[in-house]
Amino acid sequence: MNTPAQGLAADGFKAGLARLWQTRDRCPTTAPVLAVHDELVVECDVADAEMVATWLSECLVEGMRRYIRRVPIGVETTIMLDWSGTRMDSAMLRANDVTEFLEPARR
Image (tube, rainbow, N blue to C red; front, side):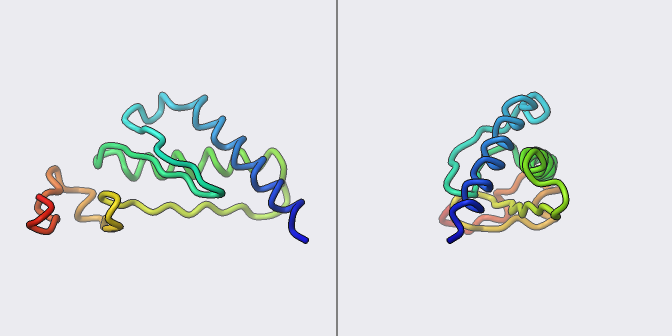
């Protein structure tokens, strides 16, 4: 039964969310959209995406560190252009206008 592990993961996730709230001034363009199980969806300006990914990772690891100290903690982040699932690559992150990367129907 993995109930204790799931409970610990949930506690760490909530502690990470609290840390995000406490440090929200680091990424003022970021808005939380959805938290489901162990995933968090946020929206931010494209120019801030990499900074926001780093901030999220740091806060979530810090939240879990309250409960686990000797086991490596990993956080995976994915940067997407929008809700369609289009992953952003480094060229898109550097571009001032990402509309050039959209399909014509979505411009």
